[in-house]
Length: 279
Ligand SMILES: CC(C)(COP(=O)(O)OP(=O)(O)OC[C@H]1O[C@@H](n2cnc3c(N)ncnc32)[C@H](O)[C@@H]1OP(=O)(O)O)[C@@H](O)C(=O)NCCC(=O)NCCS
Image 1: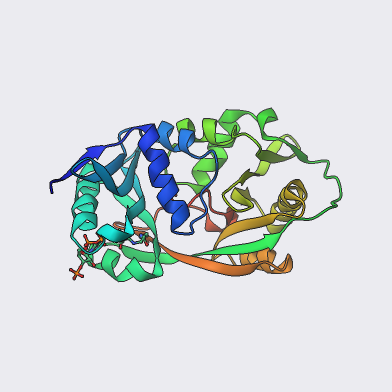
Image 2 (image 1 turned 135 degrees about the horizontal axis):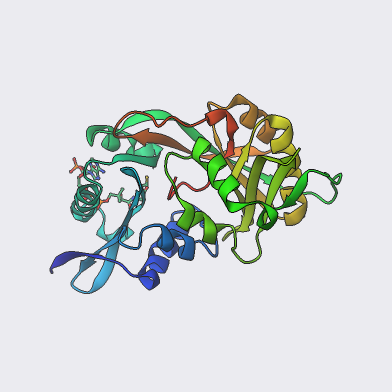
């Protein structure tokens, strides 16, 4: 049996997304296009002979920022060294980057051994949508917001320019993307999208908790009686408060970790992480 590693195409990325679903990570239904657009070279797969058995993403953003995700080996092939070999290939690709990841509890010790330092926890909260909400005069479809202004805001909450990702991300089918504008200024934005189970909010960025809540209320109404998920950085106490206020319960946890210094981003504006796969 021969083990080989190759860059993968978008069809094989769907295989990795399928494995992520099997792990219970509940990926979005239409995530692949945006993931692929950010760094088409950043997805790797390990094959035993010609069978895909292992996946990892190592997305390179401008400015030497990288993010790892989709680190998965098919259950029957675990413990044979296939994951570790793939991991090393991915880290080689991101050589000299500051690399981030959202690590599951079971792997955090391994990531420490590989040079990652824990920054904070991200908690996934689960709740249910709603039937009614007050209209908010400040909320507009995100398509009405200038993309330049959106990018400027995004750089306060994300360590790199990810315009090629965002352009596609916010145009997913069956999703709702909204901005919050006051006196002509963008003070928050976010999106809810359909996933394997229910809907996930991501991102949800806002100047304060009141704006985050107004946006979140619109997302709850959009999903109606379906399940809704929000991934919250635990260090933002106001985001945790928002999740609890809507009777959401914690159901999954990761540690955000980095190989170098923690990027200078405004965590108090992050009420919902964009994704655990790409940061
Ligand atoms: C995590 C996972 C991908 C590892 O793949 P694997 O093929 O089973 O791991 P390997 O057989 O290559 O591991 C070989 C050794 O390297 C270690 N190792 C694997 N990845 C490592 C990493 N990133 N850093 C440090 N050590 C690592 C293993 O613990 C193992 O050590 P041991 O020999 O002392 O037991 C696999 O267990 C998996 O798919 N788990 C479920 C999905 C998941 O939780 N992924 C992580 C998401 S953050």
